[in-house]
Image 1 (tube, rainbow, N blue to C red):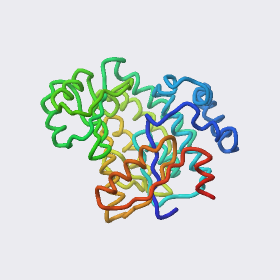
Image 2: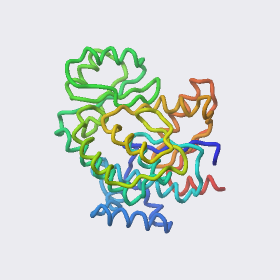
Image 3: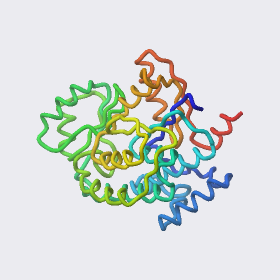
Image 4: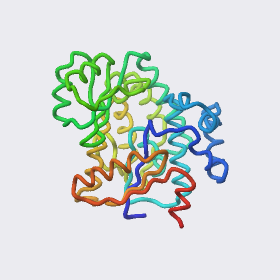
Length: 305
C-alpha cells in the first residue's frame, strides 16, 4: 500500500463496542487490550465493550480507546503507507504505528493528555462550536471582534471550522457570524485553545521523559503541516498541538498536492469522518480520490478478499 496515505481519527469517533471483535477474535487484539488495562491500571476494555457512551466520551478514556483500536487494526493490516496523518489525538496513533512511540508509552501519554486537558478548565467554563458553510476569513474577522478568549480549534474543510475557548466568547462569536449552520458541541473542555496551556505544560514534561524514535514512514503534523522524519521533531509538534489549531484542511491539500499526489486514503480506526473529508477536499481540487475505512475485523477481511 505504498501508493496511499493512512489517516487516523481523533476524539469524537469513539463508540461503545468498538474493538470488541478484535479482542475476541485476534491474538494481537487480546494481548494489546490486556496491556492497556495493565498500563492504565483500570479496565479500559470493559468501558469500551460494555460501558456507557458518556463514560467512553470522557477524554481520558476516549483517547486511549481510539489509539488502541487504530494500533491493533494497523498491526493486523500488516502494511505500511507512503505517508500518514492523524487528526488531533490521531497524530499519536499515526506516530505509534510509524514506530516513533512504543504503544506502551503512547497509551499512557494519551490517557494523561486527556486527564490534563480535562483538568485545565473547570467544566462549564469552556466551549467549542462547529460552523458550517462560512468562509474562514469571515470567521477570523468575527473572532477578532470578540472580547474573550476564542480561536480556531480545527480547520477541517472549506465547509467546516471548529472554534474553541471561553464558553461566552464562543457564543458571542456565533452571534456575530450568525451562520445558519452552527452549533455548540457537547464536549467537556475547550480543546486546542489557549485555555489548554496548563495541560500543554504538564504534558511537555511527560513527552520530554518519553523515548521518540525516527519514523518508519513520514507523518504530517497538525500544527505546522510539516512532514516529520525525525522523532525529536514529532515530540515538539505534540507539545504545540495541545493549544494549537488542527489544520486538517491544509493537511489534505498537502497530501493531494504536487509533492505527494496522493489519491488513495485509508482511514484506520473508529468511524469514517476523515475519509469523508478527504473525498470532499479532493473533489474541490478536481481530483477523484479512492477511500477505504477500516473500522473492524469485517472491514479488514473485506479488504483482503
